[in-house]
Length: 423
Image (tube, rainbow, N blue to C red; front, side, top):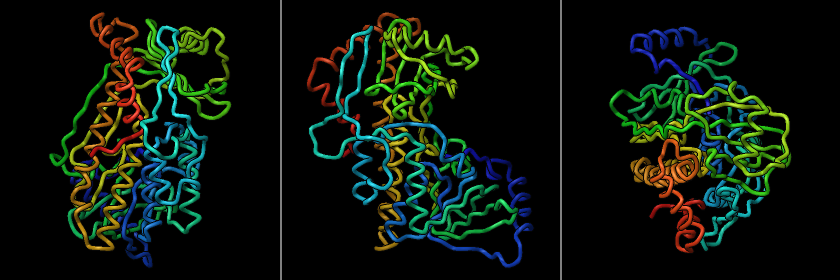
């Protein structure tokens, strides 16, 4: 969640200098604290880790660079898939932390104006997915954690990680008042995102980064406009578009654009004209646009997802193309696997879960990466053939036709949408 770049991202000389400055600033009477887990970042991953640890009776401290208000309002993904709902239910947290409304599992894919409904019903019993924007999940996770006595510290600056390969890692940070604090712990959960300090604390050469630039840009628009009945993905020769609910009177829209496009190239009139054309909905109701930005679709996996007693969780370990809604759900899965591994070690001195954390998580990461890549290529190649060419366009159209007409293809799609666990 956080976007901090601390001293571990600089040269070793600068690291040593800043460490000494932090030590010099530490006031008398504020000796080192101790806890079992320090969680870096208070987004969905970090707060899920914290709540699950709390349910397990394992002490932890959460450090977040941003303010509580900033974290609570950040707009991101909106569907908590069935597997994640089941996970929260197993921990006794579903009723407390999942806002939004139950999702009927139907996704509309509109191809040249023709509507097709595909389902995430894979034939298994379980609770339905939830249309739950990230800010709602974060707000409820925060409230649940604090209500149960959790230790959550916002505006923690200059976070740095030390002694990660020993039995007692050390975390230092500066409070809003300028006091430097030190926490000695047993484990560190790095949940501070792709640009956070956790991953940069790992020495060069330890992690292998697998990256893919999809060569596709999206304009994302948040508007006070009526939400669709269900998530909508549209394919047309004019380019890809999507319409997602973010509340009863708020919508998130996506428009395919050049990878290096700028939001200023998309004034309101152009946005609404493109949406009505690509969604094949000339009567689409517009509304005030409250946010817009452009970004490149990319995928990234760091292997392994752990270094000593530091465990990378969520976006700090992997980025998934937004197609398929897997990013936040993968973070929730990582959190569940990590907490169960810590619990086994603390309670039973069983280290197998900790040793296998990276391998287990990466199996699911690559599974969901493949699904997101399949959706990304299919729904973009099937539309505007300028980049893909007619051959790839026809291949993508054939994949969509199979999805719409083959029960077996639809069932495989539903398993992946639901969030099946790799065996």
